[in-house]
Amino acid sequence: MPDSTDRIGWFLEQCQRAGIKATHQRTEIFRELAQTEEHPHAEAIYERVKRRIPAISQDTVYRNLRTLAEQRIIQKVGSTGYRTRFDANVDPHHHFVCTLCGLIRDFYSGDLDQFQPPPPVREMGSVDSVYVELRGICKACRSTRATAP
Image (cartoon, rainbow, N blue to C red; front, side, top):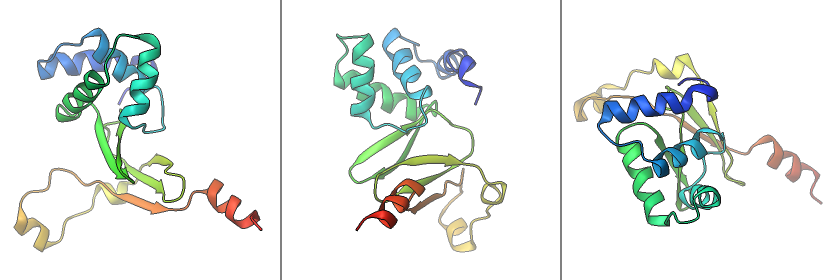
């Protein structure tokens, strides 16, 4: 994934490669997702994009997120609670998820990237990628719990 200054250029190339139009709305949805490390859910993306494009509908945001995920231009991140979250970083990486506040952060691990599925999994089918999600309590929540009476 290119750095943030060149993500829109990368996005435009990926849209062209996938044969989908890089509409103004689609570009703004990607821009909103690419400028944060929060892994926002669709409703948050909608509210933020609506500030720049007041006429955009929630359905448009949902459809574009689904299309971009299907084309692997963005990725869905395992749901925390009931909301699917999204990530503009499609490079191989993994996530840490706080089970208290829902914080999601990227981390990289060459060891996990090299993980070889065990034989029973290989018998089920071929594995295209490995994604690991570690769940626990983030530093901020741990600190808050430690100081709570």
